[in-house]
Image (cartoon, rainbow, N blue to C red; front, side, top):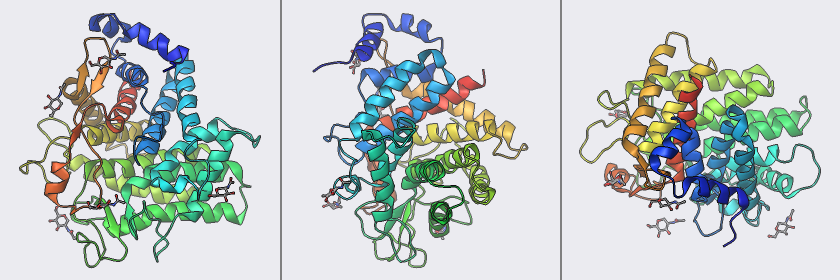
Amino acid sequence: MRVPVYVATLVATLFGVSATTTENAYKNRYSQWMASSIISREQGVMTGLGGSSEALQAGFVQKAFTALSTYYPNSAATYEQYIQKSALSTTLFLSNASHNALSYPMDRLSNGNALLALSPTKVPSPYRATADALRLSIALNPRNSENGLWYYVYPYWSYLDGMYSLGPFYSLYTLTTSPRSSSTTAAALDDMVYQFELLWDHTHNSSTGLLTHGYDALRKAVWADPKTGASPYVWGRSLGWYTMALLDTIEILDKEKAPSKYKTVLLQKFRALIPAVIKTVDPKTGGWWQIVDQAGRKGNYIESSATAMFSYSLLKGVRLGYLPSGLAPTAVKLGIRAQKLLTDTFVVKEANGTLSYNGTVAVCSLNSTASFEYYVGQPILYNSILGSAAYVLASLEVERLG
Ligand SMILES: *[C@@H]1O[C@H](CO)[C@@H](O)[C@H](O)[C@H]1NC(C)=O
Ligand SMILES: *[C@@H]1O[C@H](CO)[C@@H](O)[C@H](O)[C@H]1NC(C)=O
Ligand SMILES: *[C@@H]1O[C@H](CO)[C@@H](O)[C@H](O)[C@H]1NC(C)=O
Ligand SMILES: *[C@@H]1O[C@H](CO)[C@@H](O)[C@H](O)[C@H]1NC(C)=O
Ligand SMILES: *[C@@H]1O[C@H](CO)[C@@H](O)[C@H](O)[C@H]1NC(C)=O
């Protein structure tokens, strides 16, 4: 296998040196240490062999590395090269909406923001063609009778998960490629916000303030609530995706100066959700449970991807001023504490100087009984990018605090 020079360089710096030396080199910048470990494992590059979550793994790495490259300019070239490598790999699998992109779940759209950044003009390129195909794939994605986008091939089912990919891409594409005043711009942004609202309306539990994993618009699935179609359990990672989706979408709407009414709706949801998330933190460890609102139930455990996602959301929500000031001190304290728990408990320092990441649950699908036993019985993965990239984002927020 041919290894690109920059990967070889990184591996060489990690290889053969003791963990202590590496630790000194990174001076507790765990975001960068984990990122170079991800690069050394060549994760987040699509091969076509990694199943339906490969597109999300690539997109999530691109997002985490994009955040790193803006905060650590001295290492930006390394991250940008890897983002490019990852994005280029997706052009082999997502370049045609009907032919290949739609064979991946809505998570495919997580690649769109890096693809747009790599093709800032409309000059034809594989990046731009793939971004256009992803945009077209939203139009071709099946919908339910309320116009809700299906998450994947399961008829009439929508998941919280998909919003992390849809919200930021749909917004950035719309705001940067069509005239601001056009009716298609308004229609796309309306639709984007509506997808957040629809999921909220179907899955929101008014006594806990939390959202369950998804809903079946036909109310026919074994798990579907007869009235709302909602699945029964609050799965940590899916709530994490939705929470980060609100935050990252609001950030883009702000940056691109979108009409304020879109931000208003999403911000109201973010501000409603965060206090409910805060209420469910495990007071003993500072982490979040696999099934968020069933603390201590037999089989339930503290899960490392959801914990990282909530740490990121709390800290970045405060940094960007999206949380009420009264909530900020608690949010910062909990965000820092959660990242420390992850570092102390789930990050593994390997003998060769790389960091590994433990305790991330495998994919949980609604194509199941969606019972408590199902969620807590799914395998725990070592070095799942869905956990380690979230940890990069959470750690970066902690490092930004200085
Ligand atoms: C996408 O693939 C289909 C066949 O599956 C083909 O008919 C169509 O021309 C392709 N579109 C583009 C833009 O290449
Ligand atoms: C809301 O959550 C509570 C606590 O988990 C649960 O007891 C209740 O059944 C839920 N309500 C609905 C409508 O599912
Ligand atoms: C470092 O060690 C881990 C654990 O043994 C291994 O999985 C990984 O491939 C190694 N990385 C390199 C770059 O050798
Ligand atoms: C990873 O976590 C699992 C489950 O908690 C545990 O059994 C295993 O020992 C951990 N692996 C490492 C290398 O820490
Ligand atoms: C849904 O689950 C069933 C039963 O486990 C399985 O046979 C089927 O392949 C799954 N469908 C998809 C699209 O993964």
